[in-house]
Length: 92
Image (cartoon, rainbow, N blue to C red; front, side):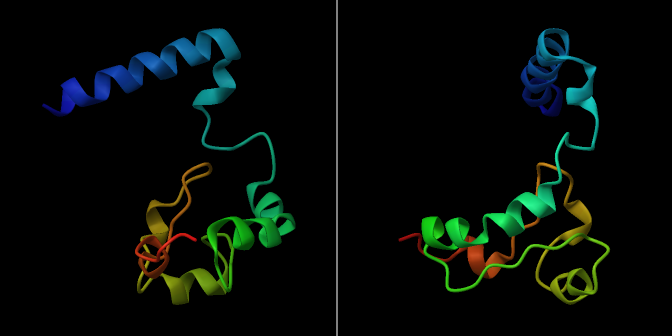
């Protein structure tokens, strides 16, 4: 079952690597994701109807505090960890 679910994704990533380049398979993004989130924090808060918004790397001290409610270890570039309190919040 897992193979059946994973294979379309693998095919997509293979096609993307051929058409765009092998860099799409790297765990690093071609831009500073944290800087982008911080620079656009006002937009993120407005778009998602949030009162507050925090972005930090998994090595920051804030990540240790967030680890109690968020799977910080699972965060990867392009796949951020999201606090469960936010995930259940209604979007305005």
